[in-house]
Amino acid sequence: MRDRHHPPSGTDQDSSEGAVVTTRAGRVRGRNENGVHRFLGIPYAAAPSGPNRFLPPNPAPPWAGVRDAGADGPTPPQLPTPPPLDAFLPTVAGADYLNVNVWTSQPGDARQPVMVWIPGGGFDTGNNVIYDGSRFARDGVVLVAINYRLGAEGFLVLDDDIANVGLLDQIAALEWVHDNIAAFGGDPDNVTVFGQSSGAMSVGTLLTMPNARGLFRRAIMQSGAGNLCYSLDTGREIGHRVADMLGVAPTREAVAEAGVDRLLAAQLSVAGDLARTPDPQRWGAEPGARVNMWRPTVDGVTLPRVPLEAIASGAGSDVDVLIGQNAEEGRLSLVPFAGLDSVTDAAFLDALRLYRLPDSAATNYRT
Image (cartoon, rainbow, N blue to C red; front, top):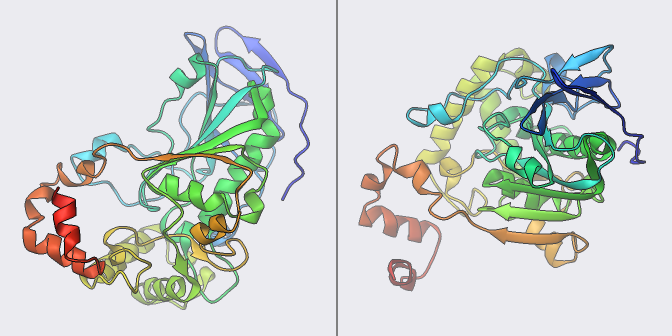
C-alpha cells in the first residue's frame, strides 16, 4: 500500500473552463457549472490492458501538462444492458476505465467531507458515468464516483494466488482519494464510502479487508451487505468453467489472450449453465448465478474471512455504519421485462424450498 501522508493541495482558477487541480500524477482541468466543479475520468490506476487485465492494479502513470477532465472517461467492459433499461446505462469505450469522477464546490484547501460512491450492478455491470454528484457538491460534500473491474476481469479465481482484483481496484481508488482529495477541497480524514446492491456488498466486504483499513471513516450500505462471497473452491470452479467455455488453459494469460468479446460471451454462457441448476447450498447461500455469478472470494489474504463473521469478531468496529434498503428496488429487475408475470405460486414455493425455509415463511412473506 502506498504511503498515506497528506500531499500539499493546489488549484488554479480559469473562469472560462474551470479550475485546474494538481494531483500526484499531474494536473487536471475540470468544468464549472453553476458553482459546481466537475472533474471526470481521472485515472486512479494504470489501464488494465494486455497481461495486466487480470492482475492487481498498478499506479496511474504521470502525465505532462494539463489533462482535460471535462468529459466522462471510459467504462469497464460489460455485456450490453437489454432494453428498455439500456437507456439508463450508457458506456464509453477505452482502456483507461479505472477512473474516478469528482464533484466539488471549492477546489483547494476547503476540508469538506468526502463521499465515495461504489456503483452496483451484480459485479458484472455498472459504471460511474450514470451518476451526477452536483447536489452533493452544492451541499458542501465532495462526491467521488469510481469505476472498477467487473465480471471475470475483477473476480476471476484460478489456481494461482490472485483473487478479488475488482475489490483491490476499489481500494486503489480509495487510496487515490486519500492522497489527492485535499486538492479538490475534501478532507482525507473524513471519508464515507457508500454503495448500492453489489456496491453495498463491496462496502460490507471492504470493512473487513486489511488493505482498506484506515481509508474511510464511515460506511453506508444500500440494499446489500457483507454476506455474499465464495470459498476458494467455488471461486476456482467458476473460473475453470469460464476457461473451459473459452477452450483455453485455466491461466490468466490464456484467458486474457482470448479477448474481451469472447470472454463476455463465455461469462454469459456459464451464468446460464449455473442458473439452470440453482442450489443455494452449493453457491454461497443464493440460488446459483440467478442472483450474482461473480462475488468476492475468501482467499485468506486479501479477504481473510467471510465478512459477516469477521465483523462479528470486531473487524471494522472503528467505522460508523448505516445500512438499509432502497424501497421496491427489485421491481426494476422484474417490471420492465414482465418478470413479475413469471413469478408463479409454484416458483415462489420452489424458492422457499431451495433456501430451506420453513413452510411458515410463505404465510409470513405474504402477510
